[in-house]
Image 1 (spheres, rainbow over the protein chains, first blue to last red):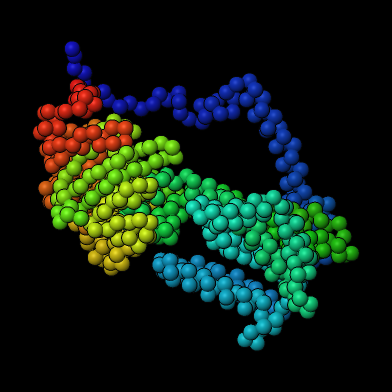
Image 2: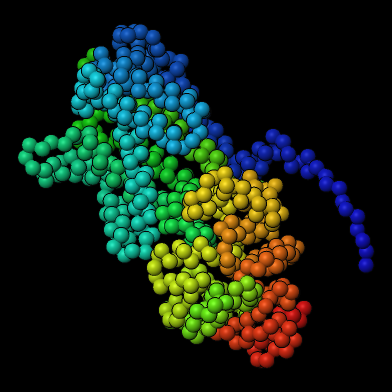
Length: 361
Length: 247
């Protein structure tokens, strides 16, 4: 028998730390890895300098006419000249201030949210905001000139379609996900059918259906706004995917959570909303944000039914005989905007995940 | 129902599919009685106590708790669960809520208590189980023993007259068992009716009024702790006691 003294804790050996070690470990660990690293570097070397030359060093930034693009690189003057079209579509120039006001109000809301922490108040503020911005954008009230949806376009249309799609598909998706888990056979089969039906059909088909087939069922003389029909189609399409993502989250919740909620006397809806849903949503955040990002990108499909979103605007702007052949600049610009929005959403999702992480040690 | 009985179980039969999990269970529990249920795994003891607060449905027989007989009536289930609390093997705390929010959830939403009062009650019970200082932490920040004590405090918040314990110490590391048992012993002294499914025989000897042995879905033997441990009658109980007490 023996008794041993407690040992001191020592620092890790220096050979396991530092830059060189990291490089060795991650980039040059095996011959194949080394080869991949070197070819990767070569590829970047091959792509990046020419692109930078075109986009930055040989590009023309200032001016307002095509003749000022003389350097041989990108002609960003085109974007500059057409920026209103990219942003607002065919929205009357005299009324653009209304869109700018709606945009500025978002900043105001972000600022006042710092003072109102209560969810109820925040929800009311947001609801109020959406009503105000609808009135601002669409007009027709308070002496504001009505701007029909045919004139909406560009980034503003993209944002409107994506926002409405996300906001309305979310609650519908939650209810469908609950329905799919329901013990009641009729509710369950309705929800399963809905999800499977929608997921079996491409979005384009649904947009076509909602814009061309649906009006056939309306009585003569009844017209339904084209944008509204597209929004309804898109929302119900997205809701099916949201429902599946949330269902994934629901399935990760152990049965003990349901039992504990039952045992402390919560009703079905209290149990689902207070106990199950918050945990399920937390699990579903990465997938939900993924679904919303693809919704944002899918908004470009509304072109097919004659609505002109940001991407469609490039084509129209470059079809201008004066600016003929400027598609590349336009598409690079649009790519950058799409990337910025999607990357923003992805960062926001990371932030939410951290915020809701209660598995602290 | 006899005057003193708070739980009366008559001819209870339950099947999972074709599996006959509870066979002709008859059990009467008097007010303030402490009952320990033990038996090999799969013997139906957890299922039995889960039937009492209707977490499990059964096919035959009746269970009357505090004068309430459920029979698929949702309102009655609610009334029953107001009065019967349950502590689970895996604690089942809500991981997205802080400790104090775990405790106040039911009082605020079910009993519609003002938040202030609910928090005051919660803190009182957290103090009783000795973890008031952890009130603002999340469940995963606590040790298993602490989590189970929180779960007990949570079930106490609605001031139940009957408490069910479903193997409350089985998922705990050995050094944490006693802190939970201490709390349970304190509760036993207060005159609340308790039914505990547990293999903690020391606890049974110390506080139980009756010990019940279940095997293969039925009650095999039922006795005072002295007789149960000192003078077991059936062979199955003798074998069982040999197995769990031999180390």
